[in-house]
Image (cartoon, rainbow, N blue to C red; front, top):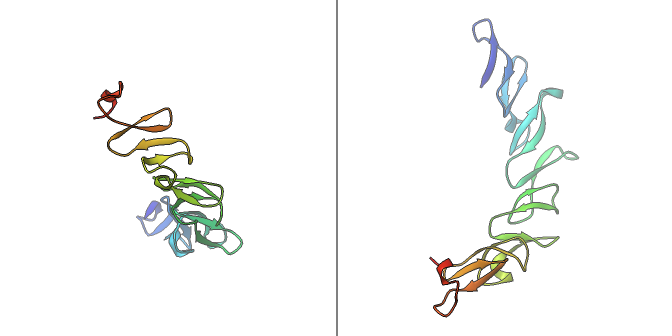
Length: 140
């Protein structure tokens, strides 16, 4: 865990990412608070970043959970990146398939970015593959 040492490795002078220097030893950021992945040396270790699906709550000095199906958030109610297959509607991460049963991934309730088998993506919509469709070559 030590990045640089003095006296043949007995005393750490700096540490790898994900740890901080405290009393000449490298200490893992997760010892500050559960799910902490980035930290600084200040005040014996201060968490500055949390693992996916968590945000740093500075008021309580802990990593707290994002809303359900949210991979990245700024606080406990504002999602910045929903889990794949979900979109943020302003308050929750909603399954794309609930917007349209042909959607696999989407950027909103009306714009698909990926479609189920048997359909193809065209201008944000999932269109059915069939022999009567002139663009059937898009269905592989």
